[in-house]
Length: 284
Image (cartoon, rainbow, N blue to C red; front, side, top):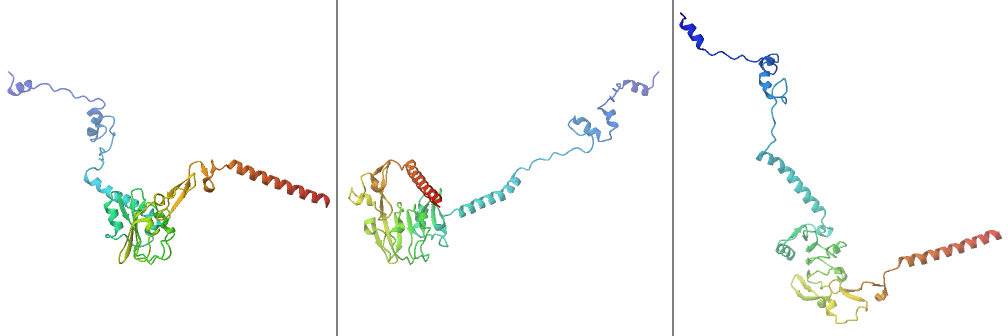
């Protein structure tokens, strides 16, 4: 008879044999204990050494903090570039526009305008307002014509001297001009709708179009037309296809005729001089 121990051994299921071929435990024994971890990783994993760690790109709020200094530097560079691009007339006088000046009020109440130094500019950089009050100016200076697109100019509290009639030539958009009290508006009463005098300044308001107010249709020649050229100023412009004195010449200036006459004259004089010099050489 079989003992209880032998009966217990018979009841156990037979154990399955473990494969020992390449790529399994038998192959891993020759590579060390680390091969058990790396053997199941497939062909993309290294055959020896510690497993590689994947580095993840930084994300979240921490990565945004690295962009802030770059954005600030970019904005600063753009601001410096814009400051350097200002016309000279805007920085002719130190300081900035006073908050209560008429130029500042005009700039703040008009959309898409901004104050820079002494100028009020639009987004394209065009000067629409100029505040040079209290700048100790005896004359507006050589850069004043850079502001010929202005709508409002403030020159009060300056010791201006001389006649300002030709100073504003080309300022056809000017509608408000503030001057010291002892300086007359350029063009006089005929060039402005209203002229108001105060204790410390004088305001010239509403520039007139002298071409509409002269009443003289023969002021310009037949082939010309009257065009405003600033307060109290006008000019006659030839119509298309006309040029010269009183716009009496029709057609464009002929460069071919000009250079033809010039070339033939030069050639004739050269031949004459050559013949004269050769005759003198024969007689000598």
